[in-house]
Image 1 (cartoon, rainbow, N blue to C red):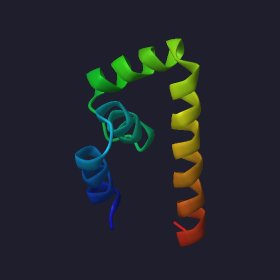
Image 2 (tube, rainbow, N blue to C red):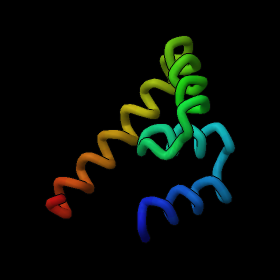
Image 3 (spheres, rainbow, N blue to C red):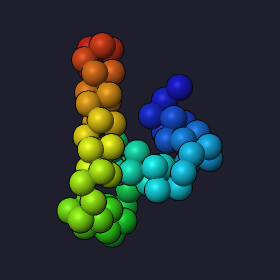
Image 4 (cartoon, rainbow, N blue to C red):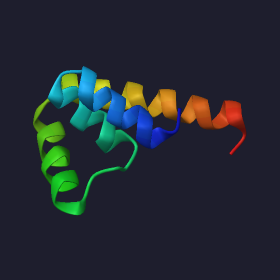
Length: 67
């Protein structure tokens, strides 16, 4: 499953905020939405931890694939 289809799948099956944070973590948001989410993350440490975990998972996948 590609990153786009994973993001689309997540968006259709998860909490909308989780889907938005997932899209943020892979750089799939437009500039305005990215800025909005970044501002939210400044105020919400729990969601910052969630995004950090998603970014760690993505980095692990990139390392595994060797991109």
